[in-house]
Length: 473
Image 1 (cartoon, rainbow, N blue to C red):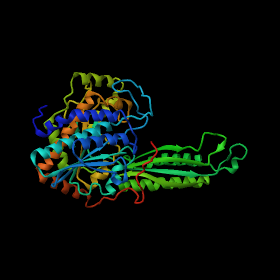
Image 2 (spheres, rainbow, N blue to C red; image 1 turned 90 degrees about the vertical axis):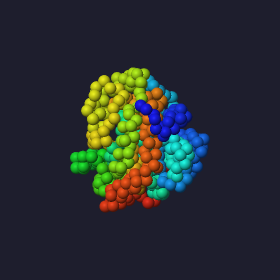
Image 3 (cartoon, helix red, strand yellow; image 1 turned 120 degrees about the horizontal axis):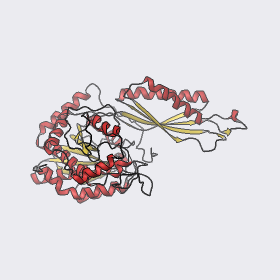
Image 4 (spheres, one colour; image 1 turned 90 degrees about the horizontal axis):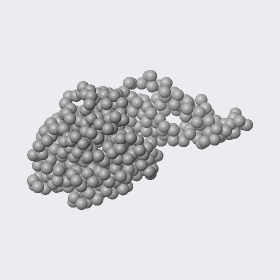
């Protein structure tokens, strides 16, 4: 790989500091809306590199923005730093070995995501200064992507209203332009209240809230046959009513996560799930109340920005992995199934290749992967700002997302190299936009064409505030 372009050299100039930041954040995994130490680490780096700070975006203590430059277009680079529960793991060890502590871990690579995005923003800041270019680069530190919908709250609060384009990335097994395909979703808590009683001496006097939750779950499970194939519904008990089987449970709470390919489909599914909850309450003579926790929109693509990003990837080539990186990745592949590995290739829309532990190819822009997708609050940004995302190759091919194997690779040299590679891709797109105003205009025209017939409507209820104390799921 020839780092002949100035912006890529500027990324290399700062890479050691941001690799260290990534490792520090890995060492302090914090869940949605509780990323206080991780946010503070990002704030220190912003201050050290001379960014102007804005904190508490949308009233969220762990959301911040650093800006550099003057006048001109505004380029946003989005970072994240929240972890996941239950994914604690020793670094670099290819066997399940949880660490002491609360059990959280960076099983989605957000320690890399935030650090790599800030590395790109810092390189662009230097580029603006060295070349005397009018323009501003912003790093947005975005918490609670894992179920908290922080970016949706930030969009609703106007945090991106003057941004011209937004750029982000996500750790992945391959380096590629992220296909703009995700599911809109909402999380809703259903709280049932019945009447407690002695389960043996007076069962006829009780009205079981736990029965209501179980009937609701049965009803939703039957509904699965009669909903669009791309939709997804998941649930988790938040309160099963207690641990005493000789008590008729008077209260119970379940959280539903409902996903659909777009907001209109999501609205219809939510209405049906609410009817099932009402029916369960009717059958058990209990009452039910609901509380929306979060909601996000589906992703919108942007063809001009995707082409610009692909051009940067092709000029860079694959990440510069070495034999030691490939050997470590091969050890992790031994913990995976053949299906895991094949699925990784299929999701990228490229032929399956056996015996390849790390990305060594450029994924064509026209490659279309399998339809299995998740959700992200980047979707809401993409409805109001032309947005593009990269995939950065930071782990062994086949590693499942949200797994101990992904956590274990998060501090490895191969993860660091993939993060720096992704930072170069993002910084390259930012410079392309700063040097070519026509690219920004084309990106805006593309967004307008996609939203003219269906303007953005924030999926969050107007009175819903960020769930700063949200329960972890």
